[in-house]
Figure 1 (cartoon, one colour):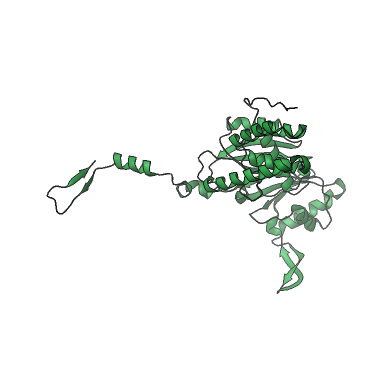
Figure 2 (figure 1 turned 180 degrees about the horizontal axis):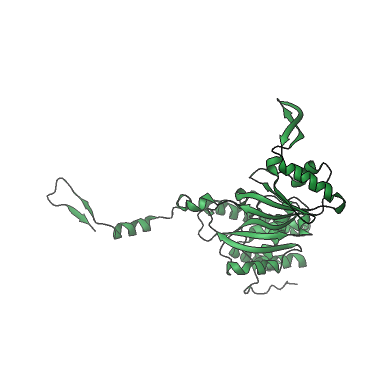
Length: 348
């Protein structure tokens, strides 16, 4: 029996139709062709292939579709690789979001997956990466430790085309379908040549709720730490090329420590490639193991993006023969002089 497929209409896209078909069972050949045509038209072949892999579709029922989608997706990826950087339709969204429980229990890769799923379910034209096995182009700012709530996190998402709605309305649209604990606070459109947000993170703001029995001792230890010029700890590492124990000054790694009731607020500098664990740093100061509960990152400060002041270096060169012809036609006339002729030949 042929599986009916409704005609596409505003807000009901080919990828959504494909996902619903996968949940109901393999389609007949005619319906499959219609689905593939819609996915091709909307540029969602790679999304469909990724979805089939994520839901672990039965190879006995979906093996042929998987092979076909993989071939089509690889062809689409090859085309995108040649034109992605100069594609005038693509857009870059910068998202500020919260990750509370249960979303904050995820490791960074899981948090990326939750955010990507919310963007796709909100019918945003999320682009796929250029890797051999493409994933949605969503990249977090500085990694958030698993189990720590993030109250003002950053991420970048690449779109194939404009979102089709004012950017200011996108948070409500995404939050309506987001996983529990995940909430988009703000969406900004940034130039495609902007630096990745992970390269701009410079300062992390933290909050830790101290258990009541430890509070007096913790206040004393933090006060002594803040008053010191250096605070060295021992850490396993290489000394003169040999395994051993080295001493490291962590005083610059914990900044502006202050108390608000039983909450300790402090800051840590961050940079690309560095991931100091605030829980371990504070444990060294307090000289005790700290529980995993009671932590949150309240914000991430971003540096000014140097690329935004040098846009000319990153703009694609779009001139072509037609534009050159227009430039010649609108510019001053050219004079070509043949030494054998008495009169010059004038062009223009």
